[in-house]
Amino acid sequence: MFIDSHCHLDFPELAGRLPEVFTRMRDNQVTHALCVSVNMSDFPNVLALAEAHEHLYASVGVHPDYPDVVEPTVEELVRWAAHPKIVAIGETGLDYYRLTGDLEWQRQRFRNHIQAARLARKPLIIHTRSAADDTLRVMREERADEAGGVMHCFTESWEVAEAALNMGFYISFSGIVTFKNAKALKAVAQKVPLERMLIETDSPYLAPVPFRGKTNEPGFVKHVAEEIAVLRGSTLEQIAQQTTENFMKLFKQLGNCYEV
Image 1: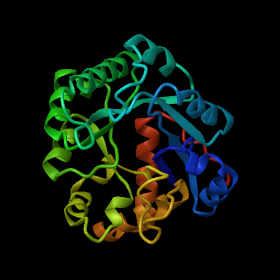
Image 2: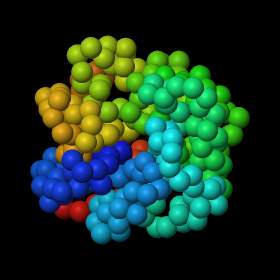
Image 3: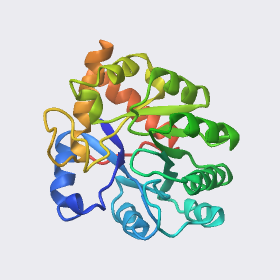
């Protein structure tokens, strides 16, 4: 079985056709998915999905790409993290790709999320783009290793992966690893220890080959696992079993799943 460790089922591309999405998950033996929060205004929708469906989990947090939104306090994040369906803080992190200028607000938001994760004893979901050095620096300064977590939709170098691994973080690969031009990322996927690896879709974005360019969904995470199995000379069953165990260990779930 497979678990999609990062998706956005509340986004309009997927929210209107959830029965179809869930059917495709079952058809592809995807037993669980983690619905990830990107801002507090939409967070109630994310939580409602997890509350309504046994096979879904949720996170709470604000993505770095949102400059003018309500900033949750550390205390608010900790309070929401106590909910039984909230398994992580995030997604949080730094993104210097789309935004320019003084981005200290991003770094402070990131620090608040790390502090909340440490207090709540919940893992972090970290997004980093064009900001690897600062991301790792803030992680070290705020003792993110005390919370642990995952570097989601990883696209950075092996050196960045190794630094995150040394802080106890997992590395998650998305459909990007199936792209023909992602040679450097494929090399990273060969080196990350299997016991520290997760798979994800980041749907509705970044659909893997053979669905590249189409709307992504959790049922497609199997294709990420297939590519990783080929890259590592492993079996699909081994990748499925280990990444599922990794998810349950990181997010401290009991491993119950519905019929597939």
